Amino acid sequence: MAIEKMNLLNVTFQHENTFDMLVKIKNMTAFHPQKATSLIKDVKHVEVMPKDDSYDKILTRVNELSVRLGLNLEKLPYHNERINVEKENQYLDEIEAALDKIEKVKKELVAEKDENDATQVILENIEGHELNLDHLFNSHYLKVRVGRIPTRDVAKLEYYDGYPFILRVYKETSQYTWCAYIAVNKDVLEIDNIFSSIGFERIRVPAFVHGTAKEALEEVKQESKAMDGYIAKMDQRISVLKEQHRLQLNELYTKAICLQDLYSIHECIIDYSNSAAVIGFVETDKLDSIRKEFEQIDGVQALTLPSNIYQSQKVYPPIIRKNNKIIKPFEKLAKVKQYGDVDSAPFIAVLWMLSFGICLGDIALGAVLSVAGFLFAKKSDTWKIINRIGIATLIFGLLYGSAAYSFVYPAIISLPISLPMRFAYLAGTLVLGYWLTGCLCAIIKNIRLKKMSDVIFGFCGVTGLIILLIVAVAAFEEVQFGQNILNLPLELVVAVAVVLTIFKNKIKTIFGKQNTA
Image (cartoon, rainbow, N blue to C red; front, top):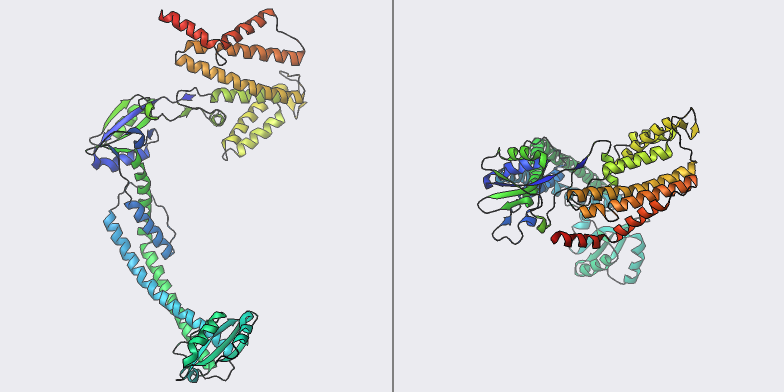
């Protein structure tokens, strides 16, 4: 129930062993590598190992190919395999070339199909009119444009009433008016411009269309049906290509994404030109096993350093807390600011469980809280905390013989306080408990640092603790029993403690001068 002690481990290795080192580091949970930029400030000819982005590029290409093929990539088991970048790029080039060829044919087919569909629409709208398409489109002196105009814009043609064109409307809907206009060759460009200005959408009739509109419509339908078949064949060829390369693409995807993640550690590698190194914090009790793990790689040397050696460069050990399953969730309520502080989680856990148990002890409430906390424990640590304070509430409820705050059997111990006052005492206990916890943690930390004056004096020292306890007990006696327990001796103790607390710095200075003398 404490913060893990740390050492710094400096591991040097040869460049050819970089991959093996990265794998080791990635698989170690007890080794905490530090960013090289923080360690090599103002050091000449020493650099951070450059990032290898070749895996990023391969991963990008695989992802793009998967989209084009309609392939859902899956991450397969990875066994630290490397990638031959040149070979894999050639492999991807071959797939892309084959896919490009199929997609090019499909694109041309789709374009022709779209053109046929548009023609089918216009033919369906002029079907039934006495119109020979061969005569219409083979004229040497006239130009015919077939298409549609937004119905709301047809009235604008009235402004061009005197212009040399003939308009033939075949069908009119609320949205479009299907029509054709005819103009002589010499005027056709001007007429095209007029119709373009009012939103005319020209539909080009394919060259294979002949005869009447009805005959032409039948030809277009047959051609579109054939096009659908060709497009389906192209889709089938893409599916075959996808299945042929599914396994290999998934394997390549897995390797690329794992190697990309692996080489993200490059920012922790120091490049000394002729060798490389990684420096990281290790839990002291795991130091020997981590060193042996690294030294399994040829040419590796591991040097143990003090954890504070790079503090001037703002490199601090990570805070790793060692608490059991009961206390672990309470770490959320007990923050540790820096390495070397005392972990207050055990004190906070005891505070919350005892406070709820003593102040709110009840079988029904405890059962509800503990069951709810157990059911939702996987969602967050908050529910785990609720589970633990629920169990404490249940235990004290059994001692009080209380269910739904009604006595169901003779109490083993009793707390003769009304329910509203219980909540008030709970709030007060938690506030005072946090202060008491802060004092205890500060005292323990200063004892470790051998700052005995800070242990004794100050609001977070023994004197502050004395003031807190006397005032808290006196307040409780006054509120609960109406008794004033502050007599002259206790008042003198409080007064002395206050003076020692206020004048802590001056007392430290006086004792410091005497020690120097």
